[in-house]
Length: 353
Image 1: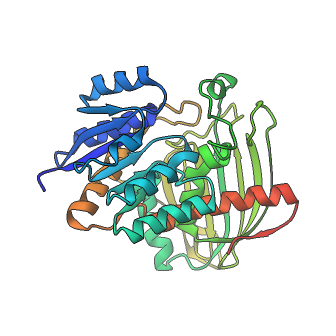
Image 2: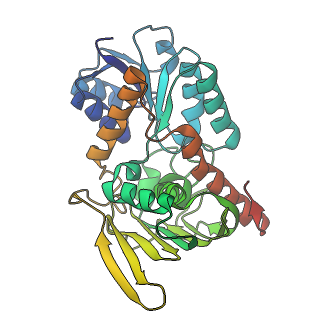
């Protein structure tokens, strides 16, 4: 195989970053794109990225035999439909977050990928960050002992104009959720990747400042599988968004130290003496974080992370490399967020697993 051939479904802002990442990998080429309903945007996309084939309906691409990977960049509630269709044609899938907005839809995606022996990955840029990868190694290795309490927060800002800029933003049917399902899911995925699964949750969510169908503010108490406690908050109403690439902050307190992810940097606080406050502070980052925060500006996309994720999918198809963000792991954030919504609606603790 001389090159891995891509199609992109959706021609919006995030699709442009997929196209740039494909162009940056010499093993990849963009063969086709589907624009959905906005033909003007589709034509501009075709011209900018020299796309050989442009269609409106992605189903027009299903009969082609020159597509190896499809990037799903449509509204969240449409992800599974396209992913299942391409999986059934033997095409591997790289899906924007979240995988989809319901458990059944996510199940359908995962099962279709397994049944057709294709790869299915998701886009969560935090998993590419050197400091966070080192933090995971430290936590998984047991150096800090048991996790005791976890704090996870997303603080961003989305204006009235943002939600009015398209027909699907802020809708239950296509966005699936607000500050958690759409924006804060990056922080939630990172928390679960580092600290493990949450088994039960008690939460409340609401739209306190925007006229939308989904939440712009959320707060939750968490109980992890290893009995650690946690607190989660998210909002798109903040006038002091977190200064991190995805607008997030995470603190994990353990028996023998702590991990802090803040301002786009990861720091280890290691206890030298459990009987006294003797703490060493160690930066886990090797590179300088040059990404601008997307907390208030969603157009600030971390291209370095996107390129790594796209290149990983190329390696997964070419060389059978492990997928960087496998679907079984990526679904955990969706499961937790849906449990948060259920808890808020019913005013009670909800068990997830």
